Amino acid sequence: VSTVERETRFVACRADTLKPGDRLISEFKGKSIGIFNVGGQFYALFNRCPHRGAPLCQGPLTGTTGCSDTHQTHYERAGEILRCAWHGYEFDVTNGTALVDPRLRVRTYRTTVEDGDLVVYV
Amino acid sequence: MIDCDVHIAFDSAGVLLPYLDPYSRDYLERGERGAPNLPIAPRPWLHPEGYMRTDAIPSGGRVPGSDYDLMCEQLLDRFDIDYAILTGDDIIDVSTIANPIYAQALARAYNEWIAEHWLARDERLLGSIFVAPQDPVAAAAEIRRVAETHDRFCQVLLSSNAQRPYGDPFYRPIWEAASDAGIPIAIHLGGHSGINAAGMASGNPTFFWEFHALAAEGAMTHLASVLAHGIFERYQNTAFVIVELGVGWLPGILWRLDNNYKALRKETPWLQKLPSEYCREHVRLTTQPLESPDDPKQLHHVLEAIHGSEVLMFASDYPHWDFDDPTMLPLPKDWAEAVFDRNARALYKLPAARPKVLADGMESAK
Image (cartoon, rainbow over all chains, first blue to last red; front, side, top):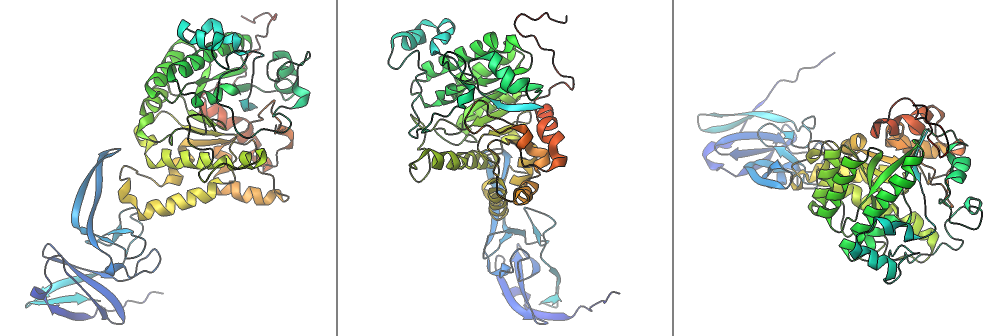
C-alpha cells in the first residue's frame, strides 16, 4: 500500500528579496523548511538533521576541505556546504546529501521562480 | 597454531658486543649501565615478584626466555606451535634512550643476534625488526637492511609509549620502509620512561597492576593517530598490530572515532572510509592479556563488535607472569581456527605447511 501525497505550491517570498548567501526558514504545511540562495540558485531543505534531529538549516553555509594527498588540503565548494547547527555534519546544500556518507540525506524540496515569486513545492 | 608474542632474553647484554660498531661498543662495554644490562630507561612501576613465570627460570638460575630447550618444552612442543613470533624483551624499550645513534645500534645488534642465535636454530621462530623510532630515518634504513638481508623477520616492533603518536608525519620513513618491505608495524607494551611521553596522559599511576591495565591508553592514542593520519591510504602494503595492550577497549574508542569523524570529516579529507572500516581491514590485535569477565558471553559480545574472528590473533606472552594458556582462552569455540592460526598466517604471509624443525644437532631434511 502506498499513499501519494500531493505537492502543495507555496510562495515563499519575492525572489529578489533573498540574496545570494541568504536563507529563509519558514513553516510550510507544518514543516520547518530552509530555502537558500546559492549563487542565484534556490534550494529548499527540511530543517531537521537526519543525524540527531537538530535544526539543520540554522547551521552555517560554508565550504569544506578537499585534498590531493594526506595532509595536502585545499578549501573547496565555498557557500555550498550546509553544516548542521549541532554536531557539524556537512550536507551538500544543492542535493541534501551528507558528505561523509551519501546514504545519509535530508529531504529536499523543488523550488522555482514564477513571475518573480520564489515558489517551493512541499 | 601461531603464537604472536613470545619473549626471549639473554643472560647479559654483552652478547650484543660483537654486533656493535666501536662507537656503541664503548658505551655498552664501559659506559654507564652497560652490559650485563641493556641500558634502557627503567619503567617506574616495579612488578613485586618480577614479571617472569617462575617455572620458566632455566637451571642455574638463568633468565627466563634465554633457554631454547626450555622454551620448546614449555611452549613450542607442548602446544604444537607452528610459528612463534619473537618479540624480544628489554630491547622493546630502546625507544627510551636519548642518544639515537646508540639506541639504533643496539636495535641493529639485537636484530643480528636474534637472526644468528634464534632464527637460524628453528624454522618455527620468526623475528621482529627492532628499531629506535626516535630517529625515523635511521630506523627506516634498518628496516630496509633487515628486509634485504634476512627472510624470517615478519614485522617491525615499536614500544607502545613513544615521543609522539605513530600516525604523526614524523614517522613517515618508518611506515614507508615497512610498506615497501610488505610487513606490518606492531606496537608492544613498553617504552614508559626515558625520553618518551609520560606513561599515562594524566600522570603516572602508582602500582604495577594499575599501570599494566592502563597501558591500553597508549594503544588508543596510536590507533587514533594511525587512522586519522590516513596511514593506510598512504601506505597500502602494511598493517598495524597491537600486542599485549588488551582488546576489550576497542569497540568504545572506535564508536567514538567514527562519530567524531562523521561530524568533523573536513579535518582529514583524505580518509575514504570510517575509522572502524580501516581498523577492520588493517589493524590486528593479539589476545594476551585477554580480558576475562566472570561471564565469558559479555566478552564475546564485545569481541563480536570488533569482528573478533577477523582481527584477533593468539598470543601467549611466554614466559611472562601473565601468560595465556591457549587451551584455556575464553573465546567463542568456532573462532579457534581463525584466532589461533588463520588470521596471523594471512597477515604475515606464512605458508600453509608447517616448517620443519632445524633444531641444533638435528639433521636437516634437505
